[in-house]
Length: 89
Image 1 (cartoon, rainbow, N blue to C red):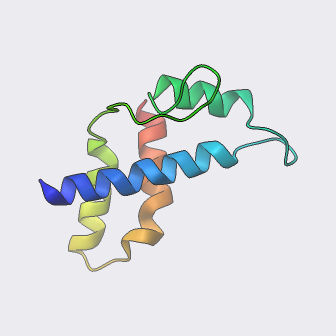
Image 2: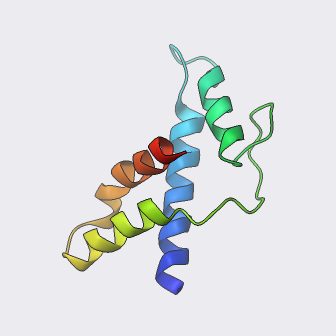
């Protein structure tokens, strides 16, 4: 289960980065990023990130595990893995 925890942590970090950087014309975080973050359990209703339990991230974890098994670069696969979680939720 260590590999699942490691990949889950990588995906969560990528999701936080994507959501915190999603803004319009360099302004504050857009309402959609707060909505997604709140719905996914990553932040509160005001957009402040917290460290509560979130979920398994099974789909992106399997994506990264398959990438690693095939000898690919896991870091380059992170955006695709994170998008799987955004689509799923």
